[in-house]
Image 1: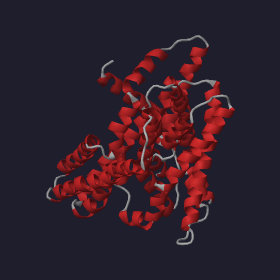
Image 2 (image 1 turned 90 degrees about the vertical axis):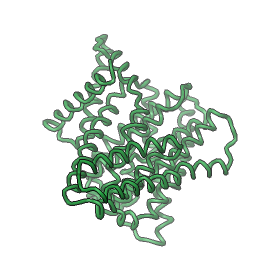
Image 3 (image 1 turned 135 degrees about the horizontal axis):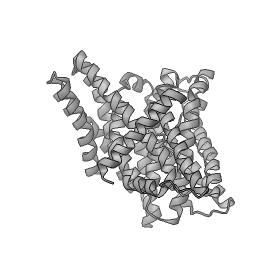
Image 4 (image 1 turned 120 degrees about the horizontal axis):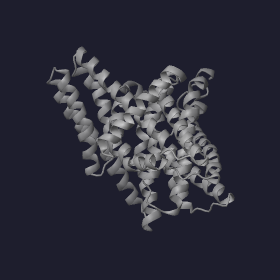
Length: 409
């Protein structure tokens, strides 16, 4: 199939699943679409168990052709991050800056080591020996919360504004730290090289700080262009060029594309919205990016649901994945609780903040994409499968119950 035919098929399925969800399930669109896609995929797998072949091999071939990690990390992610960052107010972000900074840095690193250690112990106890370095690699890809999943679900969760800012802000910025940690451990796992403190510091400067500086520069250039134009069609094109060109440039010069786009989105969504746009442009631009966000989110979550068709499932891996859910939640609780305890002498927190931040730390497509980006080794299948199980649980169970937990607290 051609790229156009694959895209058309995926959009048709997304539209069909969205319709079914709206008419019958009434779940939030992203969760509903993924849930229906998951049931659809499991139905195909179940039919194969009964000896009925309904084109699973063909569907798996199409999904392999899509290359999920490239499609998300170097395609859809830039649009989704920009759309999310545009609607976060800098004043809210500043009021929670220390909480966000600690959760997005120390929290991710602590969670990486907790997940790595516990996963190594559990897998060895279950008779699935795996080297400690690959358990750390799994910890690095599963510890950052996913901004796409988080922001998409927070819209309907009903948490307080301060908690929403903490959860969304952390998820937007912890990708930079998570990617740096992931890349360092990947080098250790495959390169067999010594990684010094200076190398780690340089990588962090290139990825995180370099990405933030690039985002500010390209965001400022786009802001100056928006100030000099009063035509919403042109201004939409400028923001599209900012997102696509900025992310591609970040990839080319080896800085963090996600952080660059988040910073640019914050600049345009705040100063650009206030000082560079007319009321008509502001309304049209918001409508455009909200629609883009909804379409791509639905398409992404539908893809996550279909990915079960190419996952290497066994009963042993399924049980391991269920145990890994508990490990990941415990690591999130321990890292968040530690960060909140450090900050309590200096600021107050709302009741139940640790529980809500723990349950609201959703994992999504980025974790699956990072797992799929691991080169072919025996450990890859185990990491991909348990990552997928955690992501499905996170989106469906945590995403559907976060609002009720927030109301209870």
